[in-house]
Image (cartoon, rainbow over all chains, first blue to last red; front, side):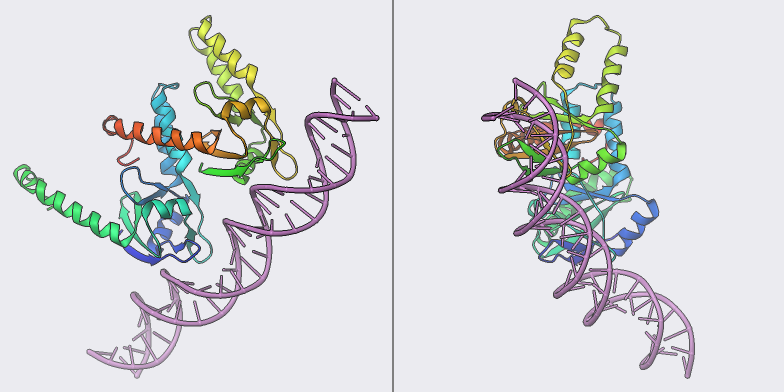
Length: 150
Length: 150
DNA sequence: ACCATACTTATGGTATATCATGGTAATTTA
DNA sequence: TAAATTACCATGATATACCATAAGTATGGT
């Protein structure tokens, strides 16, 4: 998965990249999006992945714990299912767009089983941050000889 | 899933979000609401889920504990079935509305198999609290391997 | 290697269906 | 019988599904 740039129209509609649609179709699941906790971007994944996460939380045998309660609240309270129409588009809500500061252009970034949607400006900054971070850790990586990420 | 904001009229009527109705219809069960034990909000779920919860409490090993007795009394004494009319609305009682401090706007918050109803002001505060709390505990969550960014 | 053609994908526009909500009638309860 | 509660109707707003065009990409032939 690479990064794809698509237009967002006045109604919040945006084409889900064809590659993404193919994967969703193959998995037979549906797309779920929510505000990232740590970054000004939208995060997305398939519904079954989210359900697995919820099940894990429920199974972590402290049924009445506040933390668990907070987690499910956060995940399910924010997340929303998105179905794409016959042309492959989803409509992002005002809440999500505002959080990611997206106006008319969306940058899709693949992240393994998840993906993120950024505004071009924020993504440029984030990419820069990541590069700097990797460079800073490079000596450590070299010393460890784990060098896949260099 | 998701949060939905609906109006509450002078009689306490409020539309149950369409997604919720769809689920209730699919499960063939009915909605039950009660005052949250820990927060100024209304909690709701399907009737069969509440019955399952009751069974769990009975099966737990401290059968004669006063706390559990109190707990079941509180929840089941308070819980009430709500049927929605042909337009999909329920009428919330004065007791519930007062407890949640709701006057003319209700915020529905999805919680997996349950949901909550908040006043806009209280939900804003609660959401803020949850996000801060979860961020604080993030390292713990990562150690548990419940996913990187959630 | 270049051009023509077919196909997939993205995007603007429009019609349609669904949903929330104010209002009213019917039914129940005190 | 009055008050209150419940069920139904009507409308406006919103979101959803569909159609059409354009742009970009791959494919096959000369």
